[in-house]
Length: 290
Figure (tube, rainbow, N blue to C red):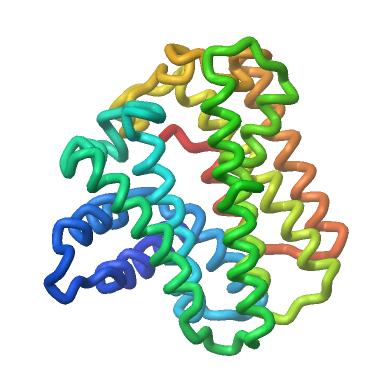
């Protein structure tokens, strides 16, 4: 079993009992769990676990934070798929949330997951001081909010179908996708007590990994199949979204992703951080086909 599969197994077991209704708002909970328990990569939670484990923290201790990250990611996918956004009917190989539960309930399911993420991250965390936990909460809110993921989504919506520039592409990639991946590593780095220079290096690495992830995602939208992706391919091209392949082509985008990853690796090497688990997850990002 790969490291990612081990993290995924642990997280999936935890998520099964993370959202349980007392019998009220039953459809809402069904809609939230429909997307949350669907078979995703669980890369963001795995990155959080891998970062903490690199410094001797157990995966079990990180599970509430890992669950919070996956809830944020799942909510963003529900909202992305809505007719007013990307208007997609397939996600992770299954009908999208609004196709099953309707647009209003899908919207509320996303809202619910967003809020429940902070319930998870505010639970008592073993070995974590109140000050570091507050920093975790602040980090997640900052990276997922208007100055992070949501801000990137807003600019993506505004510029879809426009000419745009490479600077616009860089902004969208950095905020819409990279910031939450960066937060996954930043939060993982807050479980142990680390020197400031280690925390900064891990933050740079997280940003680099997040940028590369979205670059490869753009490539897969061009070259991937529906069976591989679990969602509709060619959507970016059809909608005239701003992507790197649109401006520099598929092969140059792949090369750029590798260069961005190297920048992150160098940041870790400068402070002497070596992590086989992070290295394995990095390979997943660069070599994935779905």
